Each structure stands twice: as C-alpha cells, then as structure tokens.
Image (tube, rainbow, N blue to C red; front, top):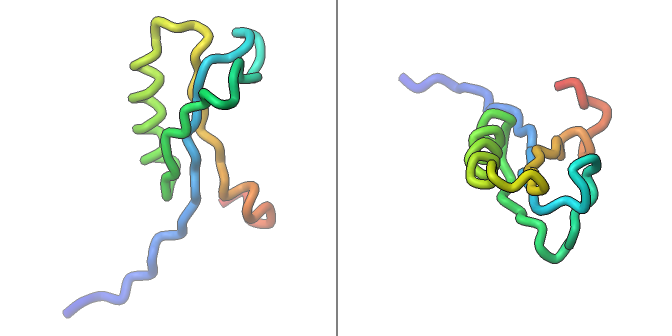
Amino acid sequence: MAENKAPEKQLLHLVIGGELSSIDGITFADLDKVDIVGLYPNYASALVAWKQKAQMTVDSAQTRYFIVHLHRLLDPETAGA
C-alpha cells in the first residue's frame, strides 16, 4: 500500500562563484567568467556543490563561491520557510 506523501517544498538555491575584484567585497572581476555551478532544490544539496567548488579554489584568495537563496527572491512572502 503506497502512502500519499506530499511533495517536498522546493526552495531553489543557486551556486555561483568566481574571481572577485577585491577580497574585501563581493564584486566579480569579470562577469563573463562567473562560474554558474547550478540550481538546486534545497539548501543541503546547494551546500554540497558549494563546498566542492570552494575546496577546489582554496588556494585562490580572490575566488569565492556563494549560495543565492532564490526562493527568497521569488516568493518574499514566505522567505522564512
């Protein structure tokens, strides 16, 4: 007997990164070279991708990766979800 399980709410996250103009800010040095790693259905899977990319660039102080909480931009009414 199969249970009717409600689908998990999709909380979209985007992982991006690249070389920054300065280690003190979050301005990319060249927008054409920004690495768009991917779009993920939840924070946990985005974190796995972020960690992998961040570890690959650990020797470059000006290269940073970020997790963007797209769900907060798409649906600000339920941003706390």
